[in-house]
Length: 308
Image 1: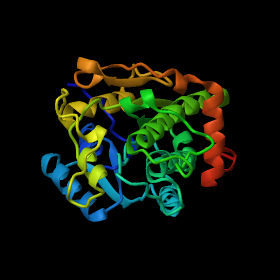
Image 2 (image 1 turned 180 degrees about the horizontal axis):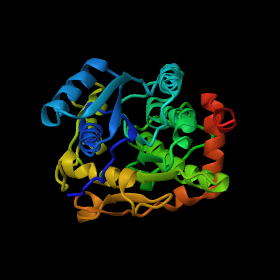
Image 3 (image 1 turned 90 degrees about the vertical axis):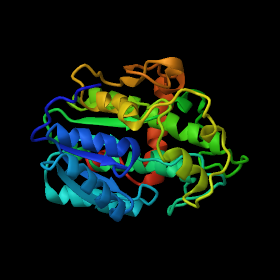
């Protein structure tokens, strides 16, 4: 098992902290001494997760706050709350997401749900929190991608699946490729500005969480068939193991700028953390810069304004 280094005195934000990899990351970051802001869509679920973690680690410092990454106003409100606190932020873990809703749905801002929740919301949150991150001595942003990024395509002419026939699986893959491109572009921006910020990425392989069922049913109870939710014949692992690449990306002294980490076992789905192959589409500097610029336009959140 990966051992998280001592994080005493550090402040971390983990999105989707009430279940799955987010909850496990929160538990282990807090156990290592970090104060963790549990960024969750449903506060009651966040409070239940907080209570469970405190039962195991009574000294854990946990703060539950609401954010809905499918609503840019909620992202702004959450970020403004942290900015008002004025405490430097050592670590942002972009973990939350949705997977393979069966029909095309939209966010409060009119984005296709997966692109909005999995990428545009985290993009806006990351950029809004840059002032707090850059106030820390060695800040990090660790963003969760997916093995599906390997077959993802960024359709700049139709990012929201308005013209093409909606595909739950390909839409998810696009959003996760976008997350990996965010990781790469932020690493380049940090280097260009001489920032000490480390941008890293991870994927959980095939980890058993409620993402597979909640996404396909959208919380409606009945699980619907999807390629991404019908892989029971493949090797899988529990969240305790599946969270380790994300924890490595977020805390390991050996992680590197733009580094991408995932399970190193069978088919890259299970096993101890190893360096994962970054698809060449996420290494296209021009495409990464284009996506960043388009994301600024769509969200109204820009680098120049946030770090002016």
